[in-house]
Length: 373
Image (cartoon, rainbow, N blue to C red; front, side):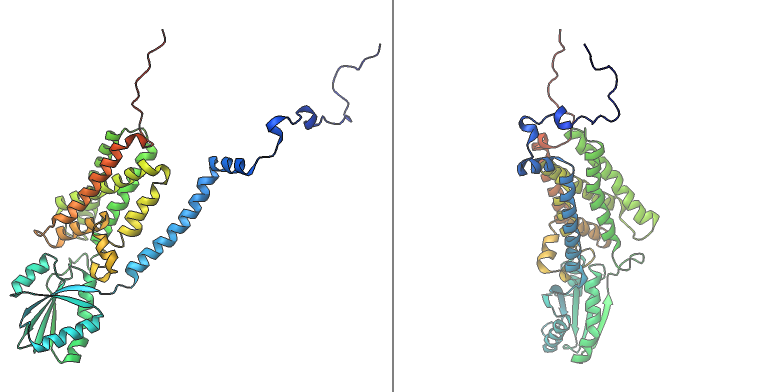
């Protein structure tokens, strides 16, 4: 009986067909449906990558739009202004009307019995300038406060000479509370506040990535730690290192630390509810809205009205206000900005703690199972 010889097939033999080796059968042989393809795409790394492309493009547009809308063309609106001296003089009304026309803004006039009372109001940041009317309105002294808002002082100083010429009323302009020599534009406080805000939530992001196993109490403790050290470093560089501004060091340090902690816990709170997308509400609240509305680069009276008012209730605006008062109006610190920062911190911590089981980090606290016997 003849039989095929053992060994490899001849070189000219056709290769076996994959279909014959693995014939299609059951579910493996049919093409994927649209729903199955979408489900597979959502589970792949390409889905979040595509979403991030769209988010980053939108964020770039919103970032440019929010800062341009708020700060590119600062325009006076309602400016609180004090009046002293012969404030009932007829020519004063003519002068104020001409000043409002030149500023294209409404002056919210507040009458004070003496220059000293007006200066106290200026130091308390209730007003931005003072008209001292003398000689039955024949002359006016305009006191501005560069430290209250250099942009507001600048628009007053620029408008005064043309108004004086138009009304025939001599005007003397004096900056009664100028900025420090190392901070001629008044932006140093804005920059150190911006640093505290950004490093505050970036620190929390890094903890969530590189120290994911931290339990809730440990996460809060380390947020406090980097906030205290980071606030000290920012204050030391701005004051001791660069000499840009003479800070009341301990007060400024603690304000910066509270700012960093607040912004870190805001991200941690959002991370509890939105997980990997927590950066979106954090960036929107603290950077897109909070920083341009803070009043640091442009004083609140020159911001769009709603934005100027809203900014004082957000962490960047509250931090800037507290720091600005600490540096330039020592002894006149207000409780409001500190309470705003503390409120955001407490709410963020409380929400994070109450729903801590939803946070993507932590080592777990479930009971250990007994070892098998």
